[in-house]
Amino acid sequence: MLLLIVWIAVVVLALVVLGGIAYGVLGAVARLRKEVTGAAADLAPVLADVQATLAAAERSRQERADLR
Image 1 (cartoon, rainbow, N blue to C red):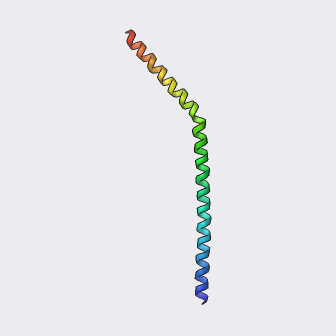
Image 2: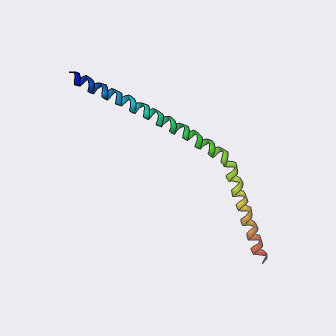
Image 3: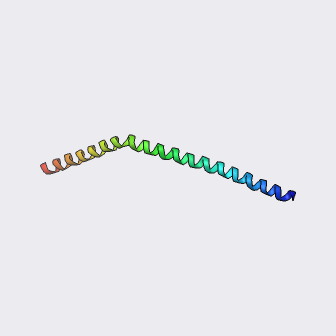
């Protein structure tokens, strides 16, 4: 009888520990997702500027090639 109580206590303790780990991991994933979304929003204008610069450079290169 005592062994059954010990096994039940071990199973309950294991479930509590696994629940705590899962809660921590899911919280970290949510924070990471929020950080990635914020970084994407912060970098969107920079990416647009880089694309505009690349397009202008390509137009300039084409104009020089047409002049030759």
